[in-house]
Amino acid sequence: MKTQFDWNKRVVSLENLTAMCERVSGTSHTFEVSNVSRSRVHVTYSNPSEYGTPDPITAVFPCYPSVDQPCIVLDALRYINDRDSGYQEFDHLYTCPTLWRTFDESGAERWESHSEIRARGVDHGGHVDTCTVCDLPSSDGPKGGRS
Image (cartoon, rainbow, N blue to C red):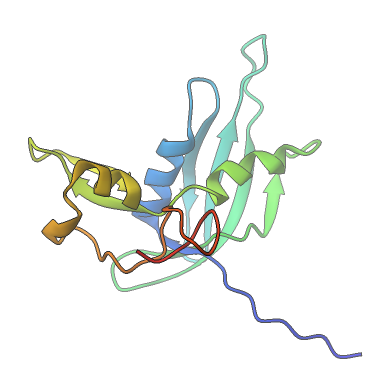
């Protein structure tokens, strides 16, 4: 029997992955890029127990070199130190909206989703390509429409 499929995978730069980790991290649930090599990027998730003991889980993502920084494929090859179903915590990272580097009124750099940029009214200023798939609702479904 022959198998076939055609699958789109999300690929992000190292800077975008770092911004995504910061975005989905909370007070106790934290994500961080913990190791970068030529062909792999490790992202560590930590949620300390009620006793304060860290119990990190690390996802290993494939990456390939680019001109200025690696391109990370968001499809984990394996999970290190996953005792139960902790791999599901990485769903927060996989479902993070597309983030764009923007600047606020004072000129400070920040990362925002397309809908946040539009809400601030700076979309027309050339900060992002407005014809990208983003987190804005569309008539085709709840996510991923074109604007």
